[in-house]
Image (cartoon, helix red, strand yellow):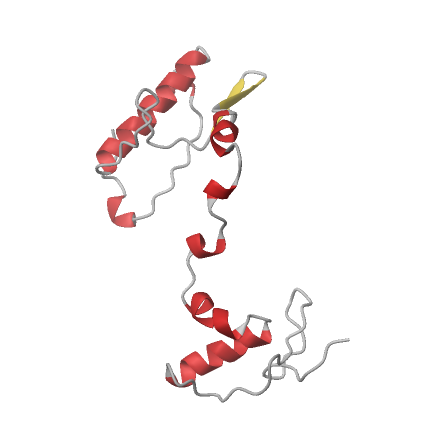
Length: 155
């Protein structure tokens, strides 16, 4: 059974997790950031985040929450075993292509044009290996991290 009072009168989140005060009372205002930070801190504490981890959760980054890949043994051999493409019947599925030059192992990402050119070169090579070319492509999805680059990488 959960102990403590509900946070801001909310007993459970939509996923069913209990929101409870943990670690005692905390004033609405935080010494570091005023009312807004105090409310965020209270919510984080209510979700079970340790007080010493509050700063990490206030300004999260993907890198801070994922493990360092170097801790996994045989990471390079695992990456080598990933399929570049899967042929199912007469349909070839290609995904996860990046701007890696397979001859040098270097990323070709000086700018969006170089990056796009390398990805397209990689796709062309995979298609050729399967006896296909770009005329066989039915659908593509491209992920862009900066929408200001949209259209700039077109080959």
